[in-house]
Amino acid sequence: MKNKLTQLLCMILTVATLAACKKTIGLEPLPANKITEFKVAVSDGNIFGAIDETDKTITLYLPYYYELDVIEPVIKLSAGAKLSETLAPVEVLDTKKTYTVIAADQTTSTYKLIIKLNQISPLVLTELSTFTATSTMAIGTYDIRVMGNFNVSDLKKVKAYLVDKTDKEYELAPSLSLGTPGVSVTLIGGVKTYAYGYLQVPQTLDTGTYKVRVKVQALTAEMKYPVKVVYGRPGINYGPVTVKQGETFKIVTGGVVFNDFKEFYIVVNGQKTLLPIVSYTRTEAVIRVPDTVPPGVYTPTAAFGTWPLSTLNWAVTVTAK
Image 1 (cartoon, rainbow, N blue to C red):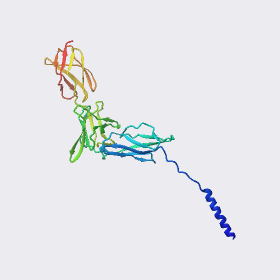
Image 2: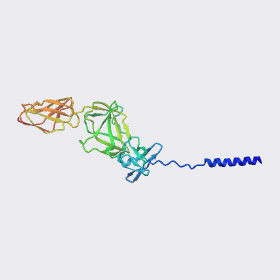
Image 3: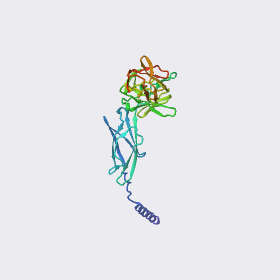
Image 4: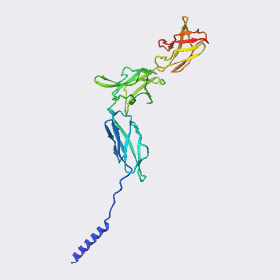
């Protein structure tokens, strides 16, 4: 009888204990400062970004063939939330873009945008030099071109550089001097090859040896063999000129720069007559007409270093004082 009473008491205590411990536990409220959808419109639909709530990142994969420079995101947020900034286009090469979401209760959450361009890689370039022969480029020349598997037709997406020993880049910028710059496509050995041409070596560049680096959107490649930058034979793309006796005039170059400018002369009555070079820089020179030069129309000649004489195809017209 005692055992049965003990068992009964134990059961009563157990039930009472369970009853005392029973509580209603509420779920934690869901965060109200989230980005719930991130998408970008393209020509054939939408591309959705992958949102990672653990890392607070949005990863957007963009196929190269859309050739986008910027994206214009459409973003959905938690109910009642807002962005801390005005939604604006984002450059596809931007690596620092973030979005901060502010909930109705003023809590915040910041997401980092990661844009991955699905380009065909690696970027392969056609060498300008070889192991035994180093290609040369004249300072200021504007007929340089680089070739490779760029897979883009938009020249704004391709950048070419000369790189010095300190890894400083000097862009080979497109020039309009020889025509409209652009990217052309040809089949070389059965391989589709892109050429980016009409590029100019900067007129301010020093002579020396440089690497060639090309960037196509997110891809970067360098040629194995360097090139050598030298002074070339200058050209004077300026004229005609009309000037009074005893006065000065300027000549300029938009291409290969002036270097070792020795003489500038005309022929007067069968005699070589120097027009003194008052001063010159890489891109312009100041020339003086002596008082003794008779009025008339003359074809000038320029002498630079050891280069052949340059007989110019424009006239210097001298008038009386």
